[in-house]
Image 1 (tube, rainbow, N blue to C red):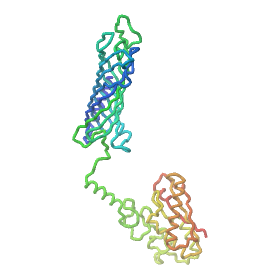
Image 2 (image 1 turned 45 degrees about the horizontal axis):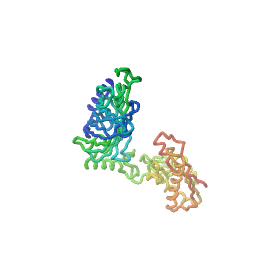
Image 3 (image 1 turned 30 degrees about the horizontal axis):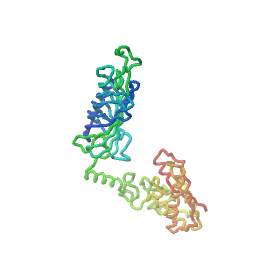
Image 4 (image 1 turned 180 degrees about the vertical axis):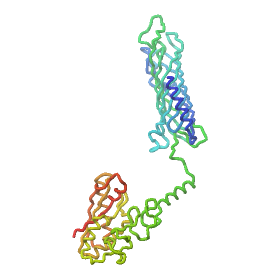
Length: 430
């Protein structure tokens, strides 16, 4: 008992020291309802299943949205079941200090209702019983007790809530039965002498009540959710502007500035998914300025090789194999990233210049997600590139498409590698 009280006081001090007054903490609680003494009762003595006759009052303080402490006192009377039990009347009083847990916040009740709440409470205290009809001519019985229960809440306003509570109380060292006509002991002594061998007694209460919340803040801790803190219009505009700034694409290459490793890409440049200007054939001339972007050549010849090209298909195959002709996609998307559209244009131009060529469009996905879903996503990506090539004037008989599902050849733990896996590649059939 002493250790429990010391622990509660220590928690209170720490929480109060760290508390912020963003919600109201105090509440006054009043309840009225039923009681039921479970045992011990003298043989032949019975109490009603639902006996109206309990009232309690309490004051509660919440350290934060989830934890608090309260002191409360309850009083009422136990009486006999009419017609089936001898008459008795026992008046009682209990006083308790309890810890409170806001189960509504712990279990995220706000996800389905902002008016329903649930509190759990448990604590210890002492009690007193006095007996109006007894064959023992007893004095009042004093004992300690342990109480635990749950309180359902319905919020009427920011200052009032309806409650329904069910509590179980276990009395310790209870001298008499609840009716007061026997000692709470395994045997009854002669001459009604107190045997000083006392056991426990158990009873419960079920009540309806009202919680009144006090304080200058808008809401009480029972209903406060930190994410609900309202921002001013200026703060909201600032956040929106920051988001707009982050999504800016200053150089128009299709890669937002916050992801763009080269934010000053020249207009029309072909870039990687990081926004870096590509030089696919690594001849020192950027693709957008290179007349032969996949064939190395001197700048004097526009980036094209000086020797005559006999088999252009061999060069396209090499460019595909080296990963220069790919179309990339965002996460869970079947719309090509704008920076890789140029690969589709290049393939379209190639087929038009080489009308006997047939090409397979191959879609891939990364390893994030279900395998069957990724198979469908890879096919959707291949189909979107197929549609764009058809729209550019490529005859449908020159194309075929297929989804190949997940590309497991890349490191699935690397975001950059997963981006490379989210692609469409090409294969020359003939």
